Length: 245
Image (cartoon, rainbow, N blue to C red; front, side, top):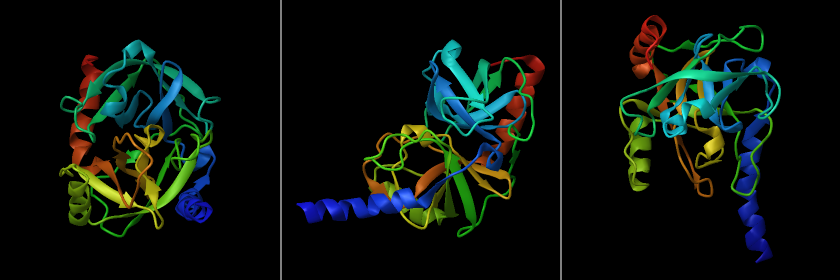
C-alpha cells in the first residue's frame, strides 16, 4: 500500500514541477474574475473597459456579484478591483468554450502591471510553444494556489485531441484548440478556467471549462481566439458605442 501511494505521488510531483510562480509584470494582461468577492476563474484584459473570460464562469452569476481583480499576482489581495457594468455572451454561453465579454463600470489605468493584450489573428501551428497562466489546483491533492502560476505548453494536433476527447464523451469544435505541457496536467479545475493561452505576447486561447481535477490527461481544450476574434472585436464596438449588454 505504501509503495502504491508513493507511485501515485510521482505523477503529482511531475504536475507541480510543470508550474512556476511568477510576478504580475510577467503576465500583466492576467485578470481574476471574482464572484461574491472570491476568485472563481481566470480572465484577460482586452482593453481598459473589457475583460474576456469563459462564459461558463459567469453566465449563471448575478451581474452585481461579479468583480474583476487585475494588477496583482496574488489571488485574493492587491491590485485594482473593478465592478462589472454589462456582460455579453457568445451564442448562448452554453458550450464549454463560449467566451464572455465583461464591460467594466470604470476604466482600468493601464501601466506596467495592467496591460491589454492583442488578439492573435492566425492560429498557432501544432508543436508551437506557448504559456498558460492562472490560479487553481495543480493536482487533486493540493489546495488552490494563492500566487499566479505559469506553465509552458505545446500546441497539440487538433484531430488527435478531438479523438482523445471523444473517448471522454466530448466533441472538440472548430472554434477550439488543444495544448499540453511536456509533463501531465490534471483536468482543468475551476480556478484555471479562463486562463489565457499566450505566445509572443498575443492571446491565442482561453482555457475551457472542466469540473473535475482528479483524473490525469494529456491535453486541455481552449477557446480558439483567432477564430473568435471577429465576433469579439465587433461585439466590443457595439458595447462601447451603444452601451448594450
